[in-house]
Amino acid sequence: AVVSTQSTWGYRCGEKTRYVTCRAASCVLGLIPTFCVLTFSIIRFLVYFGVCEESSQTSVCVFLADHSLADFGTRGVTFYLLFAIAGIIFCVVNTVINLLLFCNQTREFWVAG
Image 1 (cartoon, rainbow, N blue to C red):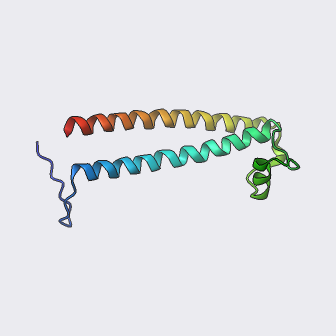
Image 2: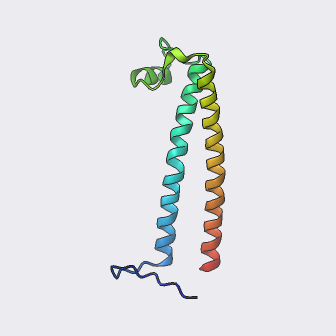
């Protein structure tokens, strides 16, 4: 079966262009949410376990305090620990799904090409 790659505007893109565009979009849509959730989960872990406190002088803790990225009053609050663990689980599941889709897309491209 022949698949037409011509769009409604008359522009024709090749298989390689569609492959690269799809790969770039999937990387962006997969990495950005994972990175954001992982970052905030690590911040919650640092605060929960008392590694970072408002008076800490380490560069990471000072950065968190300067940019108001952490609520330092939540040290030891189980609710925030649960959010941190749920965030890590999300990152792992999201990464596995993205890798499976990445491998499947690569296999389909090389079989079709």
